[in-house]
Image 1 (tube, rainbow, N blue to C red):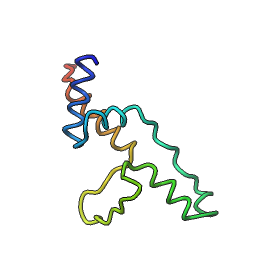
Image 2: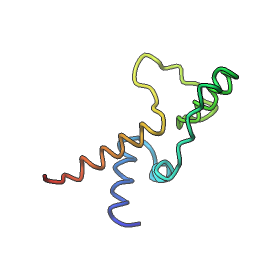
Image 3: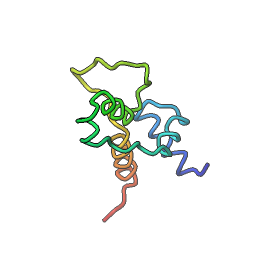
Image 4: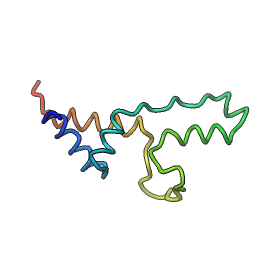
Length: 93
């Protein structure tokens, strides 16, 4: 692993509270496509099951914490991590 990759993975692990292996897996994983509105109209249960795949939660975990910070879907986590990497690069204009 190159030093830059190591630093990126270590920083993401610290910020996200994940192990280096989990961060590497997260950065490689493709987010599943969003379910269509038509699926919601046909089968709401299946729609929400597909929507849940956007999150990194253990499938057996039920998150009842809705009063404070909650979990974010994978595309949001990626955007935040990318912003952190970009802002830490400190590129002068």
